[in-house]
Length: 330
Image (tube, rainbow, N blue to C red):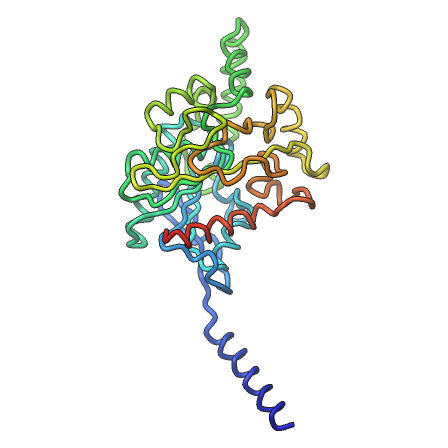
């Protein structure tokens, strides 16, 4: 009985000590105007505690967090923060060229380096955020530890090619300015609600994601780009580690409205894709996997976590990547 009581007291003491030593950490929402607290989490482990801060870059049509409530990376910054990571969610223009968005991210990375005093950052970009993080790595290689592209548009998308062909058609000069103006106006509001006014240019963004636009960008920033689309690229370039992953599913949850969008756009893509980006187009550096049962929105746990119940959670994939970076000393 005494032994049992002692064991209970010791166990209870450890629990109290653990609770007493538990720390609370925040993740930050950034823009070119600066950074602010996005939320706080109780740190429960060091599984995702990378050496350098993790900086996220949103894709086309993206944002950081609307009104500080709805995060583009749904549930992911919170989970990584709880597992010990230092997380910064950047905000680039929802629609603009790869170079303009890259400059916006570069500005924020420099702010984050100054705020944290860190020597480097780990960059993670989704979709059009892939070129953004590559841009920063190309111009600021000594300050970047790793680049991870999630469904990054390395070689462009047939969806962008098709829309661009419509813009260049006889009706393009009539319809394109009207449609573009509507898109730009809407996403200006999205940007403001996310914390920063950015000039939106949907036509420039579209051009960047075509096969031709992507080839021009790759010529400027070839690091990690495979020689052949379906191959792996260099795992290390300029001292920076390059990683990528993507999905090849389209219809994953009938309750998710985004499935109906990618269900339509997938018809424009021959072969396997996530509905917007072809399987091989997502390849960059070390390809972790290119056929997760996820579509383009599932890859960042959108919309509101309505993904297939039969696939690995995207939150888990990002946590695993953070641990992979940690293990690599990054």
